[in-house]
Length: 622
Image (cartoon, rainbow, N blue to C red; front, side):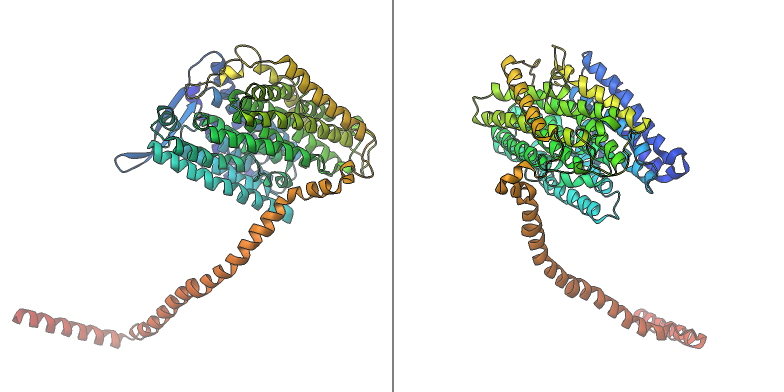
């Protein structure tokens, strides 16, 4: 089945075209076309993964895309190895259930058909990234997701907040992409090609100098910082919650934000060859996980709590990669996809019932929405790292890798940051659970359980969130599946009983504290308000948005706008107006020639013939 892997991204691409062109004429606005395309890709992906588990070798195929000269061709090929197989299953699984969920959730939307077309293209972009055997093709999928994120976040563009969030996401990620593209061309220049295998071989053989490797890896990581919401380019991710909830689930669980982590994992031999870049990744991840977890503590919007949670958990993955835990980072990417997709979709069901995102207008929903509450609880406890749910196993493996690598000072920072973040995560999870489902209902109307089309994906994803962690146990585990000749061999995960007990105790302490503070519902005054400096700093999101908008956007716009206006008015318009004036004057002269009077045409013809005769006579006479 590996030979058919190209169908996995091709089918959503075809679905996008079909829905876009004739979707409104199809049953249910064309939504079944997108669902069927992803479902077939999901079956193929599962078959490929079972082959990997069975010990099948990696499959690679490639051909030229467009030859340029005699010695250079732009490649077009795919690599189907264990890493790709795992990500194919993650992307198609989450996308499939998000699309099923969207049928009920988005019904009645005026751009219903267009929404499903964009979902299909978005999924195809991530699948291209997963299968690409070269950085140029990977960039194509990467940018498809960037464009789709703009359109999906701004799906309800009539609302200025949505339109602004879409622009912010697009421009912020483009900042990181500038570095990413520069890194691609640095490595292309050094290796003589875009193929990942060629670049890795050049790094491992020493043909590419260590300085070039460090530069190329650092620039590539800029793209990951933007896409995966790492400090300081994480600010777009919470604002992206303005889009429809299914979009939030897809972005945060299996596509756009996962792309940055996947990039580092796919190019891991390049990053591993530069200790300086690995340290950079680990330090940035440590900062990101802490600041995002603290911001999640002060959010009223349930989707923003989950958004900052995503930023923090992505930082866990990056931290695992930064301390050398390649398998642990990918493992957490795998488990996180299930419980974060579940949490967003369950939050969407809550929002659908109470018609509000604010937890101040919720409460007491455990009784009114028991299935939604049960599934949300599974996802929340998995996020908090409570055994034996999925998040516990993958998060513990990252902490174990950091503990075992404590000979490196940076690894000690990662371990401490990871343990503190584990406590903060459990604390804001408890706060979110009690404010949403506990105490008394504080909203308006009569909330009720969602319909079957929404509940079915929640139940399936809850099973995944509960059981996905067990694939990391045993000799034939996920750490074995994702090893390829290009990537390091780590063997099965190491379990440290002392760390397991410590991490569990920290998580339980956070849950207990959150329960003590919020079990009676929303307090009259948030507890952190008693620390004015901390509260103000968190409310202003560390003043990063102020810095970007006032210090950069407005300052740059203030300087560039007048200069651009002058250039446009004086040079561009001057050139255009000059050309137009010249053309008009020429036309005035020519209109006397084109008078429409036959006698003038005959006279001109006669004079022309005479003139030609005179010239010819002179030439013959010579």
